[in-house]
Amino acid sequence: MAQADAETQARYIEMLDIRAKVAGEPTMRKAGRKCSVGQWFADRQRLVPELTDEAWERVAPLMTGHWGVDPRRMLDGIFHKARTGASWPEVFARFESRSVKTYWDRWRTNGRWEAVMATLSIEGDAVHAEPVRVPPLEIEGAIRPALLVGSDRDILESCA
Image (cartoon, rainbow, N blue to C red; front, side):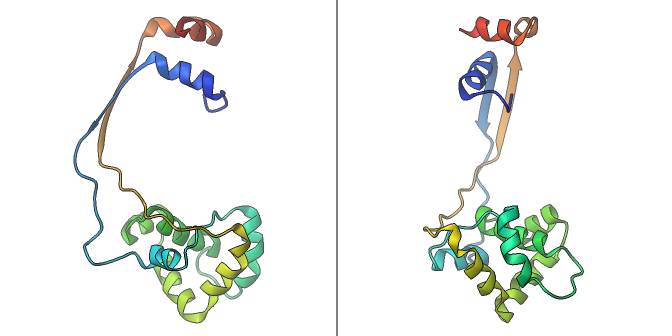
């Protein structure tokens, strides 16, 4: 379905009986404590860059030295935190390393962070938006089995 155009995807969705129910309040950050990574971008009115292969090629020469971890993964973890507002423990779990915060602190102190961001400045600057916290959801879905019989064309025609 990922390769289907938007119209085809919409027709598939029409076949589904999906219900979503908000199951609670969104988790909020601790009052009075801002994310230092997100705040860095907000203070400078910068978007958080995507660490594409091309972007990494530009910053890789700045990542000299001996590494016990993959510096690209650490940088990607820092960008993920800024982009999502995830807590440090959430970042540690996703990137399988507590070193993400260590490198964030170290790079800010030794000037490497500023050098990396100056190198990525050609990505374009804009106001950094605060991440939106989505509440927990309960999602149920069903599909009519009769619609699954036949080819994709038959299924799509049954939705028309």
